[in-house]
Image (cartoon, rainbow, N blue to C red; front, side, top):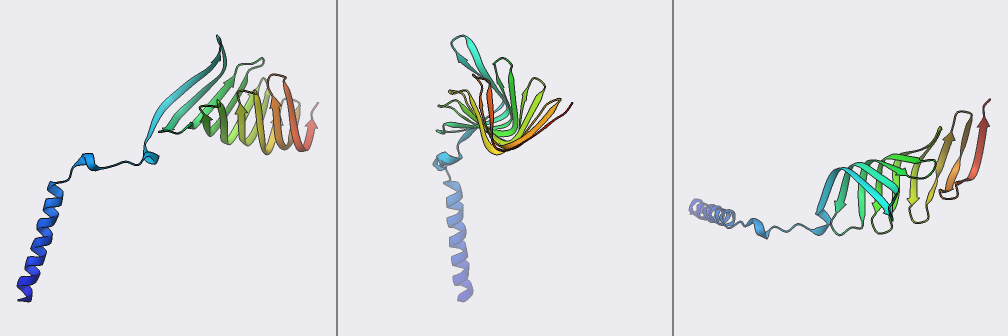
Length: 172
């Protein structure tokens, strides 16, 4: 009697499982909005004011979450069209769509003419044309090396200010 009862229970479970599989409908599967994303390879974005291109953003890969006002970037470079031109690059970053700001993360490098600037993170404020960081920095050229913490660079006025712990070495 126990064997026949267990046989009927196992048979009922098996039939119930088959009915679930046969009635499975893919349209009933919901994807939560936080997991909906689009991606793009080789993104190239030009920010224009009037007929002039103020800056250009290039990224190997861009991740665009649905409804989000930010684009997550990988292997990016930013070219600021000023005289002299400024080139920024990093391993990753975030582009804020509404504000037009770019935050660069992980091994940031800035190049102007024959000078090189390195830090861990950096923010480009496109509206105020301001480059800032609170991290340690290293600024080097053919005849100098300057280190410190924090940076405030006004691109339009061509003014650069290192905030604290400034140390400079000049070569002949």
